Image 1 (tube, rainbow, N blue to C red):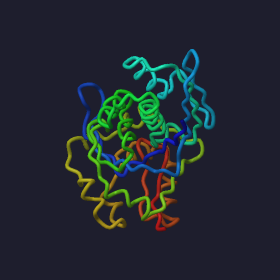
Image 2: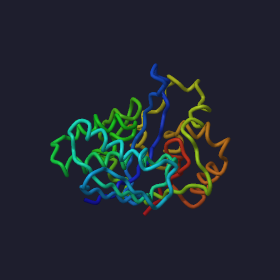
Image 3: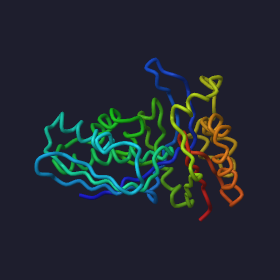
Image 4: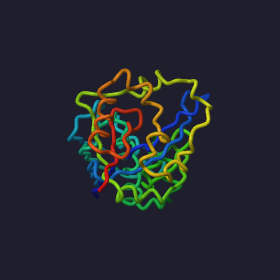
Length: 259
């Protein structure tokens, strides 16, 4: 079985505050982007589960990949047989595009189908959330308003038209990588608990007004340390983007261009 796990962008990202468990509560709009994807193949194996990965070189071993963790989660619960997982990476990692989360969610969905586990989307989302904050989004893989740590999802099907209304271009400055820890460490805590524009209402305004309404809080902490990312965002506007933003905690920047 072969699938093509796609990436996502964040249309706005507000960090609401820190939780007792050390994570942060967020609110954001997740938008799937199908044009940038990985290739994931899973087939039954003879004696033991293994994983092979190529394409973009990752900074972790196959055994530590979220695909393997997804398999191990379902193996522990259902005793599914060994498989061989082959992953070709096309989505850059550490860029705020959710590639690893997408791979994990697609692994859960594929194994669910392969071994007739009969888990519905809600049950898959519950298991995906145990693997990572963004993973649950990729189960339904539809535009959603996300809160909590990114795992509480409200579908927003009206945003599906974004992919047909605009050309979504995603770029990363050469050599730039932003760790999640780095992005969080520079956050302006005075923003916590402040009233912001409701993202669900903001996207109903004309797109040329979005730059004043829809912000990614991480830009404030990331841009001073990684000016190339800020420059790329400015360049997107110079090239005619109707809206541009960093996605997630960076380093990728996306622009919405008229088609």
